[in-house]
Amino acid sequence: MANLVKIRRPGTADAQKPQTVDPDAPAVYLETFGCQMNQADSALIAGQLGRAGYRAVRDPAAADVILINTCAIREKAEDRVWGRTSQLLRHRSDNPDLVIGITGCMAEHLKDKVAARAPYISLVAGPDSYRSIAELVDRARGGATVVDVKLDKAEVYNELDPHADDDGISGFVTIQRGCDKFCTFCVVPYTRGRERGVPPREVLRHTRALAERGYKEVVLLGQTVNSYAYEDGDFAALLRAVAAVDGIERIRFTSPYPVDFSPRVIEVMASEPKICPQVHLPLQSGSDVMLERMRRGYTRGEFLDLVGALRNAVPNLALSTDIMVGFCGETDEDHQQTLSVMREVRFDFAFMFSYSDRGITYASRKMTDDVTPEIKGARLREVIELQESHTRASHEAMIGQTLDVLVLGPSKRGDKTLGRVPTFHKVLLPPGAGEPGTFVRATITGSTGHSLLA
Ligand code: 5AD
Image (tube, rainbow, N blue to C red; front, side, top):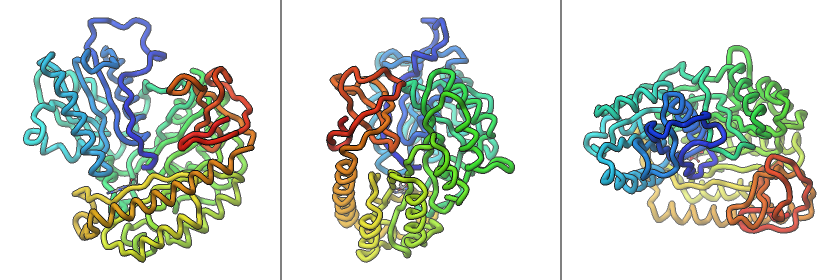
């Protein structure tokens, strides 16, 4: 899924902690890599461990158990996890009983390799093993090496209560797990298993729980959210139901899949004011030859038609995307096609990557990773440079607009107030512009590289 940012959120939120925390309870430090789904999964893990009597800590030096919730989408993501794991390993010298565990998307890759590659890891748990994560951790603490990477076609974690370490204003709700698309480059169906929808009653239960705790925004999560299906309910119906929850003022979702944007979904986006005018629409490539080879299921023309339909239906829509350069067999002509779609659409924002072979995918087995690292690097630089000019222009085009800003809290440096406009852009407001969780009207006055000023 998209929007890949490395998330380092040690521990779990104070706001939801049980009333009394036993200071002698075993301490868990949890660090998350990868996408928002992983972040939401960490909240599930934290919820399960909290209920089993574990206490969350923000300092790995204070931990009895260190869990690293991992990402396997690209080689770089895995390298980063290994780098961080060896850093965290040094805490073992002060605490020989320290348990270090790997959860999430790297589990599948690791199941046979722990002993050889990482004998210091005593727990490996895959994305469908979190219901019993406390028991697995208990066993690892008892001295066993525990590996549970079974994927479960039915597991959607019904009835569990996640315990999120977030801002208390914008919360994630997982509506779908796994993926059935099998894009030839992608490891997700292998690491997270087949697609399944979370029952609407559970989605609504989580949404209402967030609203009751004062959250103003929900982000509905899934690998291909708009293919959501549960019995005879579809994504459009789910969006309407979520929009009916009092207290939640803004709804976003990520990531939709281009071929699953039904007219019904577009219609809901156009007519339901709580749904934000923002879509992350992964393009990957602008070349029909590459799109076919990636098994994306759409052509360049169909993608452009969809962009047109979305922009027609939703005024001032912000569009972001994922672009991958250097996939197997990509020629310079294919690359030019990608640049040309970027120029035609002018995405507001993009995540851009070079292809890396993930070992178990169709491309890995049947295609040749034949674009040299030098060419991949040069093409990536070209798409980044083009996108930067589009991002800058998109920020500048917003100057002068007066918008509703959801106040999130003080900015990182503490000298401003951070907020978000409906299109998801971050905005820096004057200090004291509003209480966190409230909405203020603000006029955009300028932009830095990453944020707008208001
Ligand atoms: N190599 C490089 N990038 C990849 N992505 C997915 N798989 C790979 C891979 N093997 C990118 C795609 C996807 C995003 C989440 O990560 O652009 O949309």
